[in-house]
Amino acid sequence: MLYQALVKIHLKPGHSDPEGEMTARALKELLYPVKSVRVNKNYIILLESKSKSMAEARVEDMCKRLLANPTKDEYAIQVEKAR
Amino acid sequence: MLYQALVKIHLKPGHSDPEGEMTARALKELLYPVKSVRVNKNYIILLESKSKSMAEARVEDMCKRLLANPTKDEYAIQVEKAR
Image (cartoon, rainbow over all chains, first blue to last red; front, top):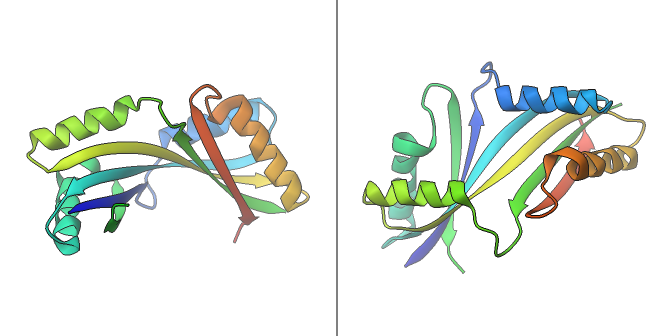
């Protein structure tokens, strides 16, 4: 069965976000009244799995091994059957 | 008034996603049964504005000038009052 996983990666509170800070600076230079910018990344992963719970466990494992940085990132996973 | 804008950037259909392809390849090398990976980026922007509609217009403008690549990106904007 084919499943689609949405993985939302965001920084843990208190960690600096260099890309967000650069973006905020660039927007301020263009005179936009910006206070702050944060940048999050989402992965949309299509994967084969026998069940939804196995797909969730697999994607959790992918996050720990490759997608998220355990020092600074938090992640949230949503899995559904692929359409 | 302070508003928070969520800007979701994703590739137009048919455009290649090198980061997603690299991620898919890395996951396959780790023997995950992955079919494909796409990567989207979200900006969360705090900005000053007199009204929600002005904030929306400002953020639309930011997308056109800086955040999105008009050739290959599509974007969606959600604005709400900052908590």
